[in-house]
Length: 283
Length: 276
Image 1 (spheres, rainbow over the protein chains, first blue to last red):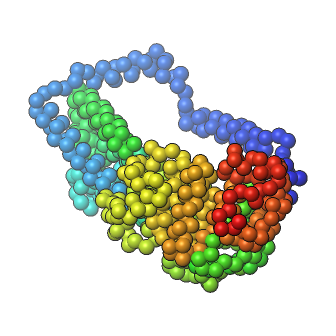
Image 2 (cartoon, rainbow over the protein chains, first blue to last red):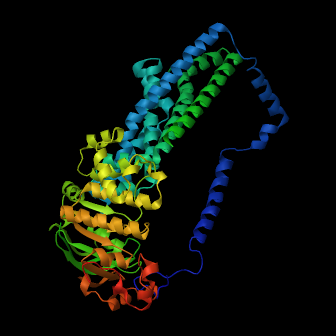
């Protein structure tokens, strides 16, 4: 529509694509910022293929073979695997309990005061900022640090790992849930809020149906990350496969270490399969 | 629910002015169609009446009160009495029809009932009877992504019928329907307004539907009200003047039948029961 045909229009149409300059600038800026970062991180991939380095790595890896299949070790491994699964599952469940209400509070598309804007808008915006701050604080401390803290309080064992996962992953889940809820189609939620619906009604009748797959698949992915994270936490005494791995490495038993690594591979494949099934169910 | 706009103006956040000095008053139970070319401000007007847009200038009174002076809970209660049919139905595709319709009462249902209804639908009979006048009662347990665009638009209408609001606002409610179904759907909205003494404001692209079903017409152009009068007093010249920028013919549903009449410039020949 030209300006002449539409006297209310206040802008004129540009002859060239007005977005092009911004995009080019962003591209150049990206390169300028990334290159020194790579240099700073001492990123020299070609060094991997130097003949000395290849020899060193080969010797190191050779120590991991053959796989350890001793019956008593496998029994220990089975118990540790179950423990790891229990830590990850309990940790993610607690993290969900922390994350879900915070995400609902932080989601802008569920804020009825933004329509208009209506009454309570400033309070709502302040509350969202606080909640986002809490989520950031929770996830900015690595789980292994939390584990060290909780091991002091609860003693060695899985309990510390569960709490550490709950806190850090609660922050991560909350942040990403918020972003998933805001990135879907927000019109259905707005329409319900405009018809007097409450926050939870709009959440479950409008936002969740459109984003259930993403929410579930991210949660399962985080569960997979929790399984892996429990290794690192095992090193600080929080139980599970990690603690077993720690013992094997300290005894320089490469065979046991690689059996444990294979177990990890199996667990990740399991998580992937769960994710596929869940997405299919929610499709 | 009565409505009153006093010299209302609205400038969108991007600087585009959508309404200027619009004044309009409707009594409870009154039915009005808003017509005008695309970009006239019809949607904005409907959204201002539905308390989803706050005017930049002028005053709004819904049921006698300024909605923007109410507390959050009072505003929520007011909104639960307003039902809006959107042009593109804001219904997530994964929702089942029954859930999409029952969502109409979320404003009055307590939270526990809303959540329980997601597990076992709380009022299947109610959903069915809201869908029945739109010929969709048999699709009550289908998922919305299995419906056509026209069927989904009718589910959006059924949601508002189920809500039973005191003010029905419809923004191009039948844009995706063929002439026969469009007629039926507008008829269902009019019947709902008659049954509950609900005020009905519908923006319509098809002039013949507006002429047939509404006793009062508001013509809008460039964000202003051009005319506002009883349908019987709207002349062919006024309509042609309104749509002058969109060519010589008036937008209607029954284009084939109406073609000759329109070429003769005689749009009021279009069927208007009760006005002839």
